Image 1 (cartoon, rainbow, N blue to C red):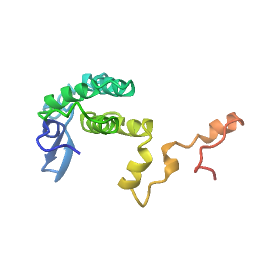
Image 2: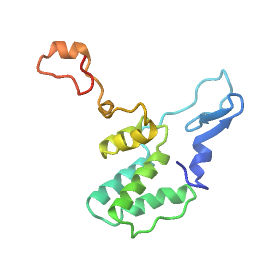
Image 3: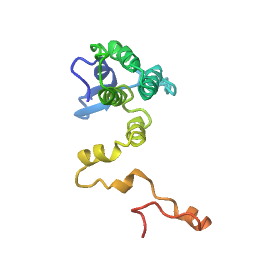
Image 4: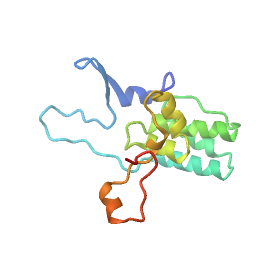
Length: 159
């Protein structure tokens, strides 16, 4: 999903020769094997705050939404997006920037897709033979259904 020359790709993902595949490199410590884990988990990211503000500004109809996206793009070594994007183009740009900026972080992509109503379309393309629309919701645990007879199982999970 990364654009050509996006510095985030080289910092977030690396090719690991020993497993002949790509590995997540984001927030990884370079400590020696067997040493204490010095990795820190980031909970509140400035990049996410810019993206949240961009989305809020877009919802308010403010043209400054793209300014927040461009702050992140410049840091990643990419060119600015035009300030004249339509609302749908700006929303797509925000979704794309969230995808690459927050990759591998606590399922942010999934929650973004669900929140914006994009999950079904994206998942149908990613898993055309196995994706089921009802999978956007988890099944309610049987014990909860037994404890509260007012609850009904989410669609698609009835036995």
